[in-house]
Image (cartoon, rainbow, N blue to C red; front, side):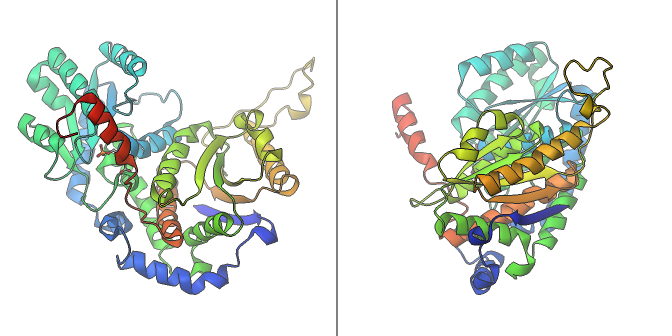
Length: 429
Ligand code: PA5
């Protein structure tokens, strides 16, 4: 369950939602009826209803086979092809999950040190691989996959490797699809009409998430609940649109340049990364867009907190808070009380965390004059995560259309690739 709240946004920083009723209704119509720029990438919109039920069954069977036969899954993908899965897996499983398949990530970098260390680690693991690439030609992913495939074939032979590899890619085109067909790998489809950063609700997210032992039906149920909950063209009744409109207002009318996503959960670090990609790649074009940034409190209150409180007034915060943490820890009583902490004895860390949260909201919004949009999440389970991710995707589509940009393309990403290919001597560059 998500709750959106603007009580820490001062009156003069808060949009009058009713003023935008017609505009939001028009843009909702554009999204709903696929009339805007990039409209052929709106497959995610009704995906929680439309998804291929047979494919999800296959995903569950193969994921269970992987869980039963391997101790590690290497997710090989970059950008939208891994961030969503990483975000959900970390948020739900956290550190050292017991009896769970270890999930490691490769194909998301050209960093030789990181790659070398992951490969060394894998030498002592019984690993399987899920390679994810929509285009099937992304350099980081393809290079890593070639290395992993070679390693598996040397270790297990061709047949053994075939059992240990699955691919998520386009249904018919791209080098990965050709390779998977030729080698006989199990494949799942990344639909034509869903872009990478909106693809966590497809096999791209579902396969790794299932391997991490997380209930993907519940995740999809959460997405579906959000799809229904935010299916309202009326801005006054749609929190996803309210969030989109307020961030648009702060940016375009009050000149804020940065939106900082804050949470009080270290498990949300990768969720922050997924969210940043979603909004920056969707909106940062045509010389427009908010820059996103992220922190995890209270950790980062001891680093960026100073800037947020007293630095230049370029940013507003969107604060995610989990009402019911999965685990809690009680602070013990100490008869000597040398650290002076007995005033907290028998209190839980979640209690202390909640007071830090309340104190920070007040400090940043009232004293620091930094608008704080609040998003409360009931708990960190598969359902709530599904709801949260869909909420952000819906808000992002609206937000980009408000800004007048195509939410679903990323033309700017190609420029570095062309230069790199030229420098690497790739044919045709
Ligand atoms: O959101 C996007 O479209 C990108 O981040 C892609 O997911 C990323 O570049 C990886 O592309 P591909 O899946 O084609 O390898």
